[in-house]
Amino acid sequence: MTILIERDRTHKMRHEVTVREHRFAVDEAAAQGGEDLGPDPHDLYDAALGSCKALTVLWYANRKGLPLADVRVAVDRDASQERQGTYRLRVTLALGGALSDAQRQELLAVAQKCPVHKLMAQVTTEIATELDPAPL
Image 1 (cartoon, rainbow, N blue to C red):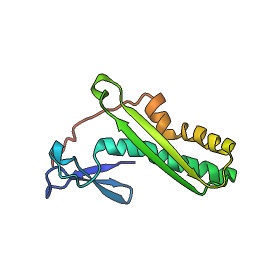
Image 2: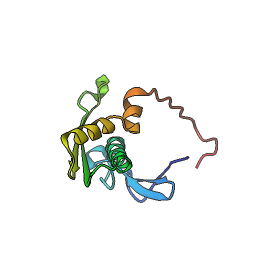
Image 3: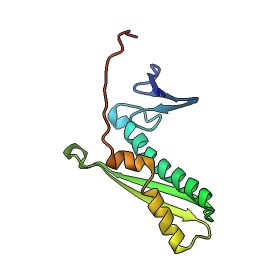
């Protein structure tokens, strides 16, 4: 699968991201030279983690027949040490429904095993960046 990111030349830094049939804008905040017309790449990274946890918890609860009525995930970023090699994300999981304490703990454990969490914390990601031989 290819995700395509293309510049929107009608704005300072805005780009359009295409994922399958979905399109959305990315931009930088005004302080970074953009117009804040969409999330920035760090926002997307953080959102990938939170949305993966939400979807994983819901999928698991549905599969196990747990009485999960609602899920809300908040991701808070501390990037103050990013340049020194530490990027901190704090995830708060709010669960609704007639869940027992044991079920809530079970869902918390499941959230900690979501695929994006594993990807961010346990997997070595190799990235190759190359030039397209055909200029735009």
